[in-house]
Length: 184
Figure 1 (cartoon, rainbow, N blue to C red):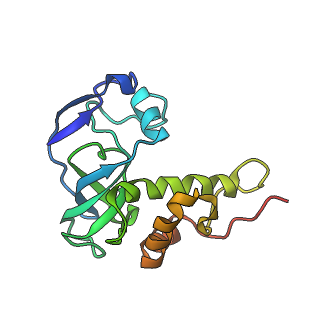
Figure 2: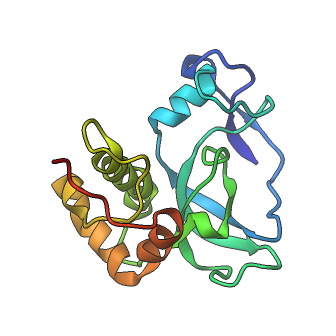
């Protein structure tokens, strides 16, 4: 498959387009045809060698993507080929195909574009986590998904559509446990 490749931890300016083997989903993973991928700060840190985790090189960067499920592992129960999803993984989003854990994936309603869906999880997650354990909040970790007020207005309708579908709520219950307390 065609993919963006990171051959060394020397920054985004040294990424190149090339060929990589198709990923194969593990028992608890889905494989998607990537239609859109976001570029996040974590991606920048990872390819620059500034992140605590370093995958073996060469690798396909890209932590967040959206597309259509084309394969599922034997233990996957929530998705089937043809489902529209957004997902997170440490790597793989900048390739034609990507694998992700079932629990790190959410269904995307037909009314939401792949481009928007590919940015929703991290874009929502970042302000939520900051509000949960940012400066002065006194919390060690976030524990529940808050309403989408912290997200910029242009993303709210997408979040509401995915929230209403139930996929984001399901993912949030696994990742976070209790409501965040406000600083005070």
